[in-house]
Image (tube, rainbow, N blue to C red; front, side):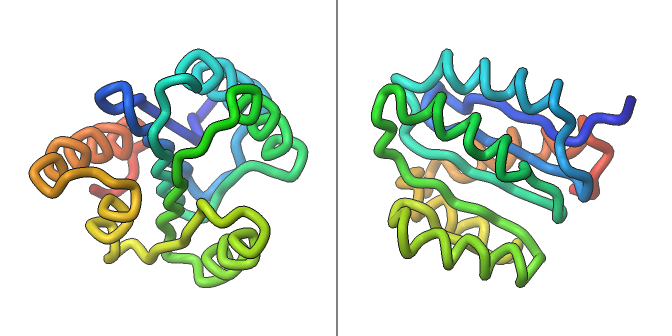
Length: 139
């Protein structure tokens, strides 16, 4: 089975989550939620980079349950080429102010939004590149 997502907990601060064009399978999403649940006390932010795929509403609810157990206050940056997805994120931000959408050319701005120091951008970007390679996505 081809993977639809890859993730890492960069420096025990920022979750990096990469989606392919396909929606995540239930098994992959469950594994991600379990991992995120183990990291929740240390999460400062979440960087989501999507080729167009993403969780369905039930999966989003599953993750919200995991993350709100500890009242996660970190920001989420969603990076995608999809203007539709960015519009959805913008609409979500009206009710969830700690989420913001970015175009793929705005990754440095997304990292700034998450509070990643400029001298750490390269390190995080290397981690992101490795995750993209695991999914056979262009880097």
